[in-house]
Length: 193
Image (cartoon, rainbow, N blue to C red; front, side, top):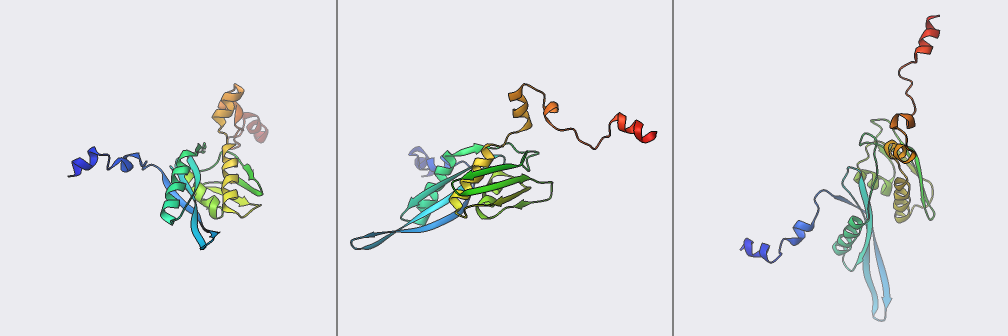
Protein backbone atom coordinates (compact mmCIF):
# COMPACT_ATOMS: atom_id res chain seq x y z
CA UNK A 1 0.00 0.00 0.00
CA UNK A 2 2.79 2.44 0.91
CA UNK A 3 4.51 1.71 -2.40
CA UNK A 4 1.43 2.86 -4.31
CA UNK A 5 1.34 6.17 -2.40
CA UNK A 6 4.98 6.84 -3.32
CA UNK A 7 4.33 6.06 -6.96
CA UNK A 8 1.47 8.51 -7.12
CA UNK A 9 3.49 11.26 -5.48
CA UNK A 10 1.88 10.92 -2.06
CA UNK A 11 5.15 11.82 -0.32
CA UNK A 12 6.15 14.60 -2.69
CA UNK A 13 5.52 17.18 0.01
CA UNK A 14 7.91 15.32 2.36
CA UNK A 15 10.63 15.26 -0.29
CA UNK A 16 10.23 18.95 -1.18
CA UNK A 17 10.36 19.98 2.46
CA UNK A 18 13.92 21.01 3.28
CA UNK A 19 14.72 19.78 6.79
CA UNK A 20 17.78 22.03 7.13
CA UNK A 21 15.59 25.11 7.59
CA UNK A 22 14.05 25.98 10.94
CA UNK A 23 11.18 28.45 11.12
CA UNK A 24 9.88 30.86 13.73
CA UNK A 25 6.44 32.48 13.80
CA UNK A 26 6.97 36.15 14.65
CA UNK A 27 3.49 37.66 14.40
CA UNK A 28 -0.04 36.70 13.52
CA UNK A 29 -2.81 39.24 12.89
CA UNK A 30 -6.53 38.75 12.58
CA UNK A 31 -7.87 40.96 9.82
CA UNK A 32 -11.50 41.50 8.96
CA UNK A 33 -13.36 42.56 5.86
CA UNK A 34 -16.82 44.01 6.23
CA UNK A 35 -19.24 42.65 3.63
CA UNK A 36 -22.99 42.86 3.13
CA UNK A 37 -23.79 39.96 5.45
CA UNK A 38 -21.37 40.93 8.24
CA UNK A 39 -17.63 40.47 8.65
CA UNK A 40 -15.25 37.97 7.10
CA UNK A 41 -12.18 37.18 9.16
CA UNK A 42 -8.80 36.18 7.84
CA UNK A 43 -5.29 35.79 9.26
CA UNK A 44 -1.93 37.28 8.29
CA UNK A 45 1.26 35.53 9.45
CA UNK A 46 4.89 36.70 9.56
CA UNK A 47 7.51 33.92 9.60
CA UNK A 48 11.33 33.91 9.70
CA UNK A 49 13.24 30.86 8.41
CA UNK A 50 16.94 30.03 8.52
CA UNK A 51 19.47 27.22 8.55
CA UNK A 52 21.26 28.60 11.67
CA UNK A 53 24.51 28.63 9.70
CA UNK A 54 24.36 32.01 7.97
CA UNK A 55 21.20 31.93 5.84
CA UNK A 56 17.95 33.65 6.79
CA UNK A 57 14.76 34.91 5.15
CA UNK A 58 11.30 36.14 6.04
CA UNK A 59 7.89 35.87 4.46
CA UNK A 60 4.29 36.79 5.03
CA UNK A 61 1.15 34.93 4.17
CA UNK A 62 -2.60 35.56 4.36
CA UNK A 63 -5.41 33.01 4.46
CA UNK A 64 -8.79 32.25 6.02
CA UNK A 65 -7.21 29.81 8.51
CA UNK A 66 -4.12 30.21 10.69
CA UNK A 67 -2.22 27.04 9.61
CA UNK A 68 -2.66 27.90 5.93
CA UNK A 69 -1.39 31.46 6.53
CA UNK A 70 1.68 30.10 8.35
CA UNK A 71 2.36 27.60 5.53
CA UNK A 72 2.16 30.36 2.90
CA UNK A 73 4.45 32.62 4.94
CA UNK A 74 7.01 29.81 5.37
CA UNK A 75 7.08 29.12 1.64
CA UNK A 76 7.50 32.83 0.89
CA UNK A 77 10.35 33.03 3.43
CA UNK A 78 12.19 30.12 1.79
CA UNK A 79 12.05 31.96 -1.54
CA UNK A 80 13.58 35.13 -0.03
CA UNK A 81 16.68 33.76 1.69
CA UNK A 82 19.88 35.80 2.00
CA UNK A 83 23.37 34.68 3.03
CA UNK A 84 25.17 36.58 5.79
CA UNK A 85 28.88 36.07 6.60
CA UNK A 86 29.49 35.40 10.30
CA UNK A 87 32.72 35.74 12.27
CA UNK A 88 33.65 32.38 13.85
CA UNK A 89 30.08 31.27 13.08
CA UNK A 90 28.81 33.15 16.17
CA UNK A 91 28.74 36.95 15.66
CA UNK A 92 28.83 39.74 13.07
CA UNK A 93 32.09 40.92 11.47
CA UNK A 94 31.38 44.60 12.15
CA UNK A 95 28.74 46.95 13.53
CA UNK A 96 25.95 47.67 11.09
CA UNK A 97 22.94 49.98 10.77
CA UNK A 98 19.76 49.09 8.92
CA UNK A 99 16.54 50.88 8.14
CA UNK A 100 13.27 50.29 6.35
CA UNK A 101 10.61 52.97 6.41
CA UNK A 102 10.37 54.19 10.00
CA UNK A 103 12.13 51.07 11.31
CA UNK A 104 15.75 51.72 12.33
CA UNK A 105 18.04 49.14 13.93
CA UNK A 106 21.64 49.07 15.13
CA UNK A 107 23.47 45.75 15.37
CA UNK A 108 26.85 45.45 17.07
CA UNK A 109 29.34 42.63 17.21
CA UNK A 110 29.83 41.17 20.70
CA UNK A 111 32.43 39.08 22.58
CA UNK A 112 31.84 35.40 23.19
CA UNK A 113 29.34 34.65 25.94
CA UNK A 114 27.28 37.82 25.45
CA UNK A 115 24.28 36.04 23.98
CA UNK A 116 21.56 37.58 21.82
CA UNK A 117 20.59 40.94 23.27
CA UNK A 118 17.77 41.97 20.95
CA UNK A 119 14.05 42.42 21.12
CA UNK A 120 11.21 40.36 19.69
CA UNK A 121 11.35 40.16 15.89
CA UNK A 122 15.10 40.91 15.75
CA UNK A 123 15.79 38.05 18.16
CA UNK A 124 13.93 35.63 15.86
CA UNK A 125 16.09 36.74 12.90
CA UNK A 126 19.34 36.26 14.85
CA UNK A 127 18.29 32.85 16.20
CA UNK A 128 17.37 31.58 12.72
CA UNK A 129 20.60 33.08 11.31
CA UNK A 130 22.73 31.21 13.86
CA UNK A 131 24.20 34.27 15.59
CA UNK A 132 25.08 33.52 19.22
CA UNK A 133 26.55 36.86 20.36
CA UNK A 134 25.11 40.20 19.26
CA UNK A 135 23.87 43.44 20.79
CA UNK A 136 21.03 45.05 18.84
CA UNK A 137 18.68 47.95 19.39
CA UNK A 138 15.55 49.02 17.54
CA UNK A 139 15.26 52.81 17.46
CA UNK A 140 12.24 53.45 15.25
CA UNK A 141 9.03 51.67 14.43
CA UNK A 142 7.90 48.82 16.67
CA UNK A 143 6.00 47.24 13.77
CA UNK A 144 7.43 43.69 13.42
CA UNK A 145 7.35 43.86 9.61
CA UNK A 146 9.44 47.04 9.54
CA UNK A 147 11.82 45.76 12.25
CA UNK A 148 12.55 42.55 10.34
CA UNK A 149 13.01 44.37 7.03
CA UNK A 150 15.35 46.89 8.69
CA UNK A 151 17.34 44.05 10.30
CA UNK A 152 17.73 42.25 6.98
CA UNK A 153 18.66 45.56 5.29
CA UNK A 154 21.55 45.88 7.73
CA UNK A 155 22.58 42.22 7.43
CA UNK A 156 22.71 42.48 3.62
CA UNK A 157 25.40 45.17 4.04
CA UNK A 158 27.49 42.90 6.31
CA UNK A 159 30.82 42.12 4.63
CA UNK A 160 33.53 39.65 5.60
CA UNK A 161 37.21 40.67 5.57
CA UNK A 162 37.79 38.11 2.81
CA UNK A 163 35.20 39.70 0.50
CA UNK A 164 36.52 43.22 1.22
CA UNK A 165 40.12 42.13 0.55
CA UNK A 166 39.09 40.44 -2.70
CA UNK A 167 37.17 43.52 -3.84
CA UNK A 168 40.11 45.82 -3.08
CA UNK A 169 42.75 43.46 -4.46
CA UNK A 170 44.59 43.09 -1.15
CA UNK A 171 45.38 40.37 1.34
CA UNK A 172 43.16 39.72 4.34
CA UNK A 173 46.08 40.54 6.68
CA UNK A 174 46.33 44.02 5.13
CA UNK A 175 42.63 44.68 5.78
CA UNK A 176 42.37 43.52 9.41
CA UNK A 177 43.78 45.76 12.15
CA UNK A 178 46.83 44.49 14.00
CA UNK A 179 46.15 42.97 17.39
CA UNK A 180 47.84 44.57 20.38
CA UNK A 181 48.26 41.20 22.12
CA UNK A 182 51.82 40.81 20.86
CA UNK A 183 54.04 43.85 21.44
CA UNK A 184 56.31 44.98 18.62
CA UNK A 185 60.07 44.60 18.86
CA UNK A 186 60.45 48.41 19.07
CA UNK A 187 58.26 48.61 22.19
CA UNK A 188 60.22 45.78 23.84
CA UNK A 189 63.50 47.64 23.28
CA UNK A 190 62.01 50.84 24.76
CA UNK A 191 60.80 48.95 27.86
CA UNK A 192 64.23 47.38 28.44
CA UNK A 193 66.03 50.76 28.28
